[in-house]
Image (tube, rainbow, N blue to C red; front, side, top):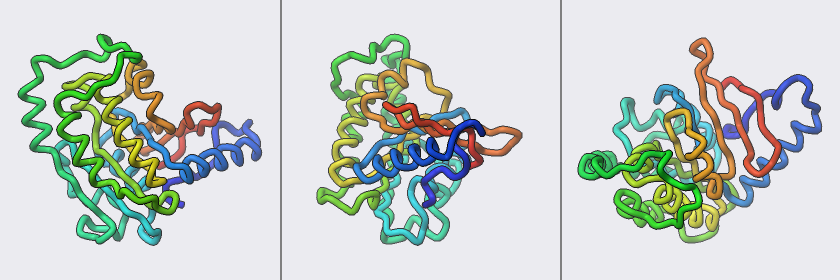
Length: 238
């Protein structure tokens, strides 16, 4: 399956049993529904490659929702699997780049730094999160779907964190997560930078999988962590 990491899990000392346990845990998350945080200071090309895997292969039945919250430097189709254009009936595109840019400019003077936000702060959405939450949630099918059929991706949470803060961003993800899980789906959210510990702590309650991205000698790689477990992979070629 295109979204499951291929290759050995962790180092050569890990046993086949550990690899099997990782695969079983991952498949369980996919059946129940889950949310994925994708981080790393890499190019948009690498982030898009990870999205293509998470959106599922073109020959599988999927409902794909791609949400732009920043101006893409490449065509929409780069985030979608090969053979799945943006006009494909399985695809819905929500483009909020202009809204996000306008709002970010209006409220940049009041932005919160990551270090100023307590991860345990009570949640309430503000600013951009309020404007985006309802239309994004409305795009998610209200009926339960076969496990893993719904795939939703948001190109970046970065601007939401910068303008609204961590507490509001967590509330935003939590609201979307509720609808994704009700549909037995998988959602992924990019944070296109190396995350601060505060961000990971704040989003931990609403994220099931953390995928790290990097480029090693110009080769894109990813590393998966199943949160709440001891299961992780080593760095694998993307």
